[in-house]
Image (cartoon, rainbow, N blue to C red; front, side):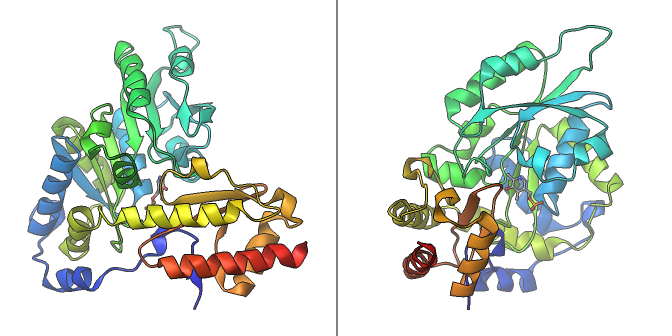
Length: 345
Ligand SMILES: *Cc1c(COP(=O)(O)O)cnc(C)c1O
């Protein structure tokens, strides 16, 4: 049995979730007849401080529907250079929405608001139109970092001044909620739309939600159908998502404590560069450049020891803590990582 720290997407549904799936009331959701989906969407909208919400099959689909809803073909989208939308969604923005990107460097995942201001296009016959600004919270590639409220407020203010909407890729927004102590709506008040995943740390088997104004979500519902994302008796998977949303948020604190424990242990190992203060939530990124192993070799050797993690770009390895890994397993993983690192020294 591996200790699986590749991602929080590996979490399995709880017994309560499986029971809820069996018992879920269902209907044809394209006809708006599925009471479980309606309840999930209403609950999500309320928690996220938005008028309406749309259940979608994945975070990627939620983000891509948001881009298609808020932009016109030929627009430019401003986003942080390591954003999930930019790096990990197959350039869906270019394929489906027909938009180009303007990427900006971030510090802990946060773009400099003044850079955002400068990146917004002025009216000029030569220029594309700036159609959208995207932010990511928590920021995956930066190591699960939380975007500060002041940052979001500053970006929102600039966006409003220029009449540009803002979308938040909040795949792990609830990790930011638990990590900061702020309500979800404190973060989402600064954005027009937000996408949140139920299938990561919250433990549901499938699904995400996209929330926003009634008008925007109505258009998003049309685009979801056009993309083939309209689903029928989908209450069977909305039911565990509702449990994820209402019962699985607070326990994310355990994942954050385990991430800190892991980071503290890694920081003491020779050959690993680990900045413990960079760990805000459940993602730990360590630099293995001085270990004598490439990131791919590191991942492979650790697998031989029984621990799974992910290579995360040159020299970097990512560990993600989640509900299916205990504190004891984290301690065990540290022993095994130590063996790999010493095995080379
Ligand atoms: C996982 C993730 C997504 C995409 O979610 P899927 O359900 O895997 O499509 C989007 N954004 C971020 C930041 C993510 O971590």
